[in-house]
Length: 76
Image (cartoon, rainbow, N blue to C red):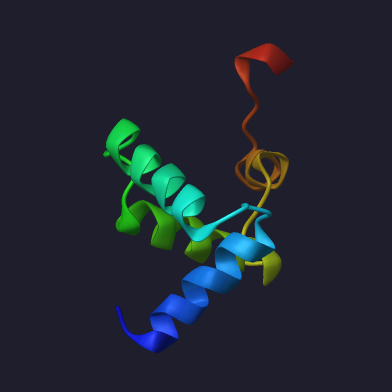
């Protein structure tokens, strides 16, 4: 690991309230083993979606239904 990356790891575990780097690394590895389907691409997609929401590039389902004159079965 580079010194810069190690500093980022240390800042992260401290910010998250872990008691030690090894405790943090164990949790990260456990999550990676238990949830292998959740990967870097998923994290990037979540982050991109969050940016879209914050920048107002999304629409509510109500807006879409109103725009296209549609209603849910539950609205009938």
